[in-house]
Length: 397
Image (cartoon, rainbow, N blue to C red):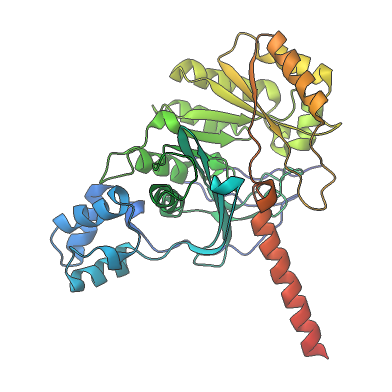
């Protein structure tokens, strides 16, 4: 019998405790505080506690959120002494890039980060003619154990802090502003929480990060809530809690199967909250917010791509405020899972549309740069393990 993770849905509860299917790792410490962890009022208090005038909080916030400056050395309107104090206390280095790759003629860029405790996370910047989207991580690793997902097979290391989430976005917004994303506007306009981790399993920090990203500068980045997407595999209590937040973000439900028998295997948390219960929560979110729910469905060859499953999904979603986003699976090295053939994909789309369900196929990006979530981190861990094994063998000789 599969043992499911303990899933916190309250800030007062502990972080997820991996067990059963999930790989357990030593729980690292959270990072030092950063200005992105705080609202503007808290920043003023923090600045005053350093013996600096409170207006410095607005100055440093304007640099970080308004001008996308993460390096205090570039904040030349701050006196050198103040800059050093503020940097040490409010601008610690949270993310260190250890690998960056680009493809699609520069329109897709992926970064692998090392955190202060050695944990690895990824983020992706995707440029389109009318927009630039950042895909960010909310956890290092993931405890949901979905077998076709590279991140799910790594297990959970820890939740990210608010600032570790926000700092990914600020960095990527700076890349977009530099004009480095070919053929796209020089402004980041959308953020999707679809990188490493289950966002709603890090609920309080993800919600605070959303508020920081959507607060006007200099308190935040000033993005539209409607341009933020938060994904989940279906943590029903957290989904219902999100309904009460009064946000207008898009909810994306990673469904991947319309029937409980298969979804129990593909998305193990389904053994706790079944398809009907998960969809009810998603439909209630749509009804409350007026926001169409995105149903994420990775098409896997000979696993979930049968015509009868398309018909069942169509019946479940018919007449609902929902849109199906079919995802051609980006296979991970050594995995038994593969993408569905194009004729099968087209038939799946046809059946859904015939049932009156809005459906699109996601634009496939980043195959040549290990674009699937978790692939770069998995490769780095594999390389490190191989290097360690070689070193051990050399010492043994």
